[in-house]
Image 1 (cartoon, rainbow, N blue to C red):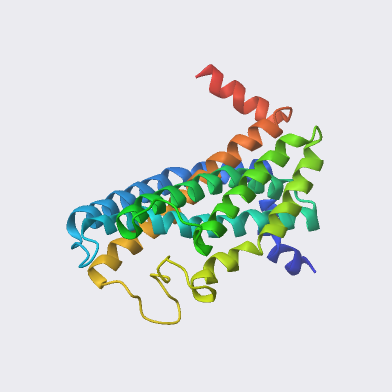
Image 2 (cartoon, rainbow, N blue to C red; image 1 turned 120 degrees about the vertical axis):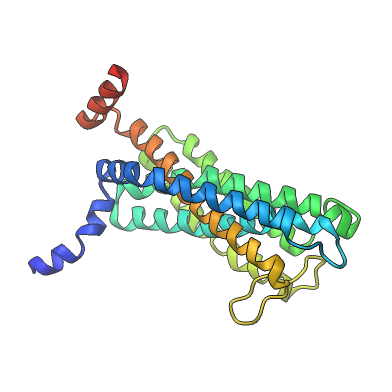
Amino acid sequence: MATEVKKWQWFYRLGSPRWFYEITGRWLPWLLCAASLLLASGLFWGLLVAPPDARQGNSFRIIYLHVPAAILALVGYYIMAIAGAVGLIWRIKMSFMVMKSAAPIGAALTFIALFTGAVWGKPSWGTYWVWDARITSMLILLFLYLGVLALQRAFSSAEMAYRASAILALVGTINIPIIYKSVDWWHTLHQPATLKLTSSSSIHIDMLQPLIVMICGFYVFYVVALCLFTRAEIIRREATSAWVRALVSNESSR
């Protein structure tokens, strides 16, 4: 029995705002360095070193922002929904804080994906916007993120706001496979997936390598942003806790 409890100790620790705040404080400097290195090298490699596309020329280079932002917008939604589900099932306050913190990050990434897609669409399709299945479902994703943010402010009770937001996040997960498979299910202007898990990539290796670096950089950046937003939410929600008051007092005295 003691062994079983010890095995799940890490899970229970994740539910402690103080433990999360302290452990992420030690991780953040390293994560920031990793994100900066990956993003800087990926941008330099993709924008200045990778060869131009045979058809699109240099306009294709927006892929190094568009694709990573779109991927993390989808992954981030799952993170938000899973955190909300954990909060609903196990009533872990920390999970709700992560869910709330993931919403503005995901909304920003979705907006970047839509904006860069519009900029890329002008030279490729001759227009900034079409009601394409992929683009429309990504717009719905942005509205879902904004809906979660709106629900956080719609209730005077934080507990009710967390629960309502978690339910919306869970319902919205049905949109993620629609976004991913839209180019296969419907005839759309949007090109098929550049990166595929079950088959070889459709992009040349010289263009693919910096894209992978950028995707990794966006993943690390997402973790950094999620930690920072969650830490801020912890301070706000736990403001009356003794450890937070002591922390704020120590910071003020420096």
